[in-house]
Image (tube, rainbow, N blue to C red; front, side, top):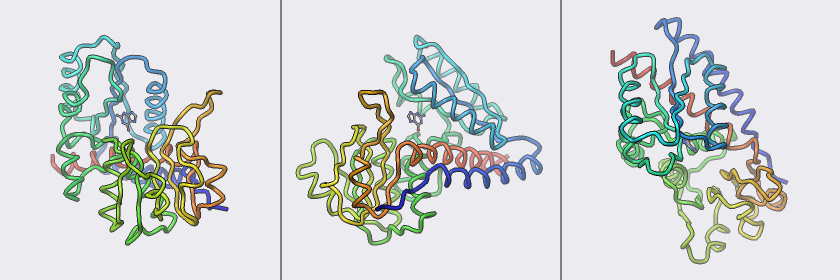
Length: 285
Ligand code: GUN
């Protein structure tokens, strides 16, 4: 039976440390780190994510502001909101919740966020830095996964790492972070031939596909570490991952559950990035 990697517990401990560092920041600089979250439209999943992000900010002592815009907001209006946040001294981090309503180009919007306030690490300049291994914000979900591996004492060095999924938010940056940790990394996607042959080689398997129970027991090597990034709803509305947990758990050496695995870590790393942005801001002013 696999060790269940408890993302809630790792998050709780990490957030405790962020809370203490935040108290120190407030004492030293007389203000709290601040995150502004911009949400356009009323996508129900996005509403929940945004609520959880602002609650997490309050719990560690950050200032948080949620700017709600209608789905019909124009690109110019959204850009002007970002322009105001750009010069707002109490806003250290700016996050525009994705997906944006149809008609808005996420690339234009994300690249309008100043890189030093881009706590999602989605701006082209931060993506370039991640590629080069330069110090910058780390994308929240992949960074959360690296943190879980570190806390669990799972070394990536020299390991066969397989990432299933090539999104800009998870798959691609995940591959970069594993590579920087000296893993031998393969990225698989919907056009990959012989997927099972490749996933079966993995010492560390990261599933970020967006399909319920896509990774079955026959695709996993005995003793592998399995990280499930999936957040899917099954036919009964139940939250499920990308991994067939019940079957894979018997074969893996460690596995993240859904819920309670990667999900809580994503918001925790957003808090880390916001505190880092605040530290950057006070050191540059
Ligand atoms: N939508 C789903 N995940 C994310 C995320 O990590 N950041 C933003 N901005 N939007 C998202």
